[in-house]
Image 1 (cartoon, one colour):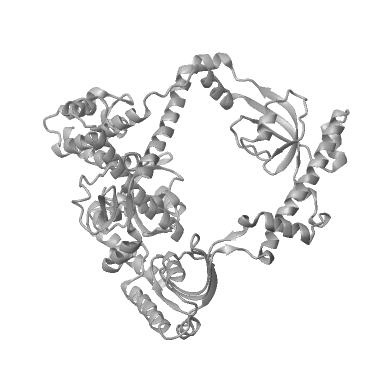
Image 2: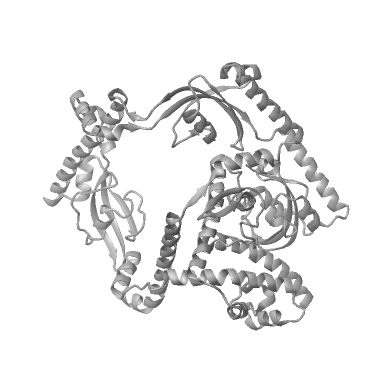
Length: 614
């Protein structure tokens, strides 16, 4: 029994470590490696209040987040999403250092006794769900404590548990210090409860100025346009712009690469069929790093939770049988279902990603080198023509270095705005994992005020919108007058060619289709008795006339019964808000040096796995 518990505890501790990465990194800034940044190898990527951030540490964090996002999304990440992951990894490491520095500044520490008490009486949440520590389906603290006290318990597991609490407890103390003193008085608590529980239903007319009045019905003079331009010149400031031509080389895998990945997956399956241990092969071969560390184990999952092709295989494959390669957007999976009951299964897998083969990757690099060489001597169009590549045109701004249909081209934009002269051709850039690209600068326009001719379309749109709104207001006031003179909402709607719509029930905080959220229309709805009609209400760029249908008052007795639990829940929400503000303030006051832009490109050139990742 104890051996069984030790074996399962190894898995538990791994799962616990993975599960707490999100909490400890996103919320606290925990370094699960146990190393300081000074100990981490690799180049220095930046500094947080003089404390270095290493390239190796950044790469580990990035890869972990990248794998997590791919599993959650179910589709390959776009170039834009990849950059978001890169930024999130950097933010994690920055916050890790800021929190650790604040702990040192405040002198917050943890004692051995605090660690012992926490380990005995406050196990990590994952332990509560493990059947080894349950009695009649409920967590049994005595069983958990018996396991900890056993002389045969794996000491490495105890070291891991101790490290977890030595990180968690100081950060918990900091959280308590930052969020202490929050309290919601009864009057404010009732107001917050009322906002969430009081409901209303209404009928209403919506007057949309854009559809109510045709453009042709509005007269605009050149004099009006000129006057608007002169009075609102600051509104027509434009950023610097670069008109470019560019050529791209697709870096996505080819059909031959897909075939090579399939062949590798089949070879892996043959190894397992030949007697190789599935878990060992998974640790060695699987591209899913998170599950590979667990011998390929995915744990338990429910029907429909995985991507469709994987899900179908998981519910059709005989228990214990190793599947043929299963293709999903992630690559090829070798799958083994370990157990299945009702709509829940437990399985393990080996993932073979579809990557360019070495031969195809080399051919791609040769093509990119050829393009760069030709670009040193020829205009971009001529260089592209020799290699059979297509040229496209685009416009960039420093704030938005994006090419429609491709994504970000930050390095190329830096070149276009800081180094290039019109007619020059850039080097080949490779920071985008989806493609190589090369630019030619056609024209660069400095920032300034748009000329009247270019600003006129925007001015016309503004004036049309303004005059249409004025027209709609006049019509709305006429409709309100008719209702006050005795006509019904339906009568004025029919006479005006409008539809009476219904909404609700909704609370003061809900988004209401047709009405919007937290605006004058929502507020007016809660001020109406059943049958009462409002005046003209303006919100969300439209005009409304509302009629109350029903209002449900909050239950005061229910509030009194639940008052303390409501207070606890809302205070917890306020604590999270204050904690987020505290972290933001730490970052705002910190001196942060970020050298990623220069150093990541250098590292990618020197380390092929990193280059492939980015």
